[in-house]
Length: 138
Image: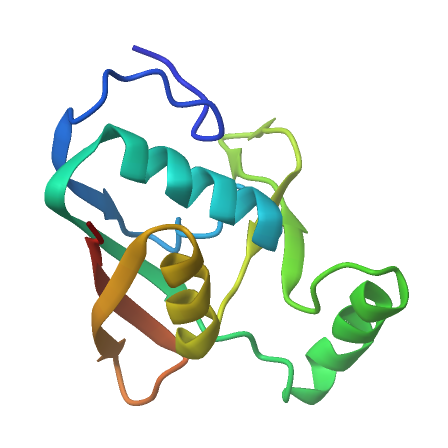
């Protein structure tokens, strides 16, 4: 079944667990779109369902990233919303937005959408790459 993550059409209470590894947590775009996505997940989640996701703390402090971050700020976008596309064996996909979030922002966003982050797990030596576990509230 092919489905857009921004328009989930599963029956209510279909899932116990959602796994979003490979830096997929921000695939829906900006804060508002990601919040809508999380609310959609809550709608198809069973009570006490879990979301296990990975993302990356934005590198806004890295000098070479500063121009990109400042351009986003000037244009009214989240500082850490990037655009990218995938290429494989010469085939290029469409451009899509990817939101990078600090653990604090991920916690806030999850809470606003009916999820509580219960654990943050740094991947590697620092917090640049991390995973988290969130549980559905209510």
